[in-house]
Image (cartoon, rainbow, N blue to C red; front, side, top):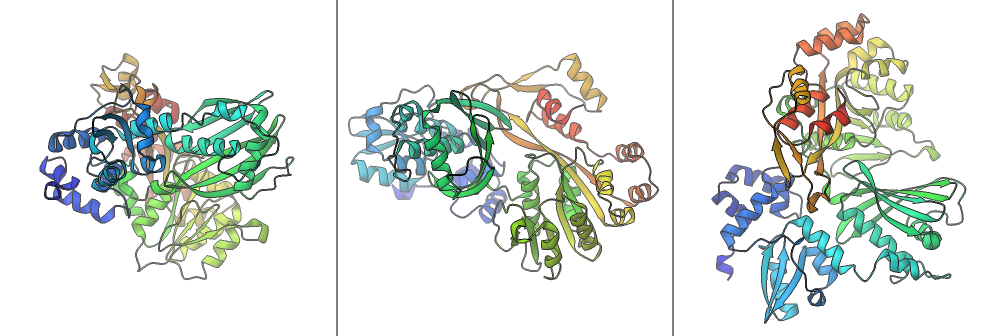
Length: 547
């Protein structure tokens, strides 16, 4: 009954999981159309198990594991595939006039009413984890559209735009699987006699499918059509972009084709537009580092650089900083290649070298647009570095990225670009180095006593430790023991002492000793602190950050 319908936020406050203040704060910042549960999970205020337990206790709705529950495929026809994917509902069996449906959000009364009206049955919800529902939807609803079946249905002259065409179905499945697995990239690798389909999940590439090569030409043609690329060109690299919705999730795809010995290799970068991390609280900064970072970006001028290899989350950190600073009192302009996510209230410029719009030329024009804050996607050459430095010295706050291994190694990297040392010293406010490391799967996390080697490692860094954690492997994490990623950081604040040392050409080792004395938290330290908290493993920290 409608009178019994409570809001999720109220249930969580009643259960003491969150405070009323945190609830109101989340209501203010949550994205338009986003469910409260997803917003709270995204901000790290609750975990999924807490959410499920509260719903189970407060609403009396039982919890099930879909990985262990037998699904009656005869009931799939009762709920349309599009509706099931859009609302994250999985019909599992029918008992008399009751349809039992697994739901991520059993308080989605609109979906419950819609299912009741369309089926004419009484809907009996059970709670399941979001990822289990998504995996089951792909497993059962796509059973009739397997990759193997598509291979056998090869047609020589095929309509590449028809929804029922095998290549169209195949491309849709590849993209759907990528979104479902939260992959950052899909690699389509042609071999001599087959095609490897590989997904990069949590930074690690793994082969998910091997297709026979008879559908290869149709697959390539379909992707080229979607990305507006030249279908007949097979000898030169090509780049394109696709914007589309995959099961009601808006995604932006960057397509890169590279001719190889066995055909064109395709890499598809997936940018999930519904999951842009734009709050500083979501970036994984520890309390010391986030305080230092906020102090840096709130200064009226200076240059702040975010460093790390490709795929280390630098863009997310930049966007989070811009979002923090984005008010109607300031003029923020960016020059990017490419513009990955579009942000309201920020003027974003797309680099286009073919017409002469480079980082350097774009930056020159930006400075005539009366900006307060300038973001440069990447400093790649001396000219861009010099303009950025001079902009920061003339009252602008400049944010950018650079490819270096650590915060300290950024100083010689800038000097190697032939920028005058005194300009670098005067302009540089701070440097943030970061990496992404895999998180321990919360569903199979186990505590253990550290080994002698691990204890020694923590002791050397001055961190006491009693227990560490690892994942034993479960269906939720595909037996990897890891699920999702979190950033580790080191924040270098360029104070007067470091400026003097830079001006006097002191060696990096001396500057490093000074930062250690001042309590700077290095990448390895931040990683070990997160391992101690149970967020990651020592192996993962050593893999990414070294010793």
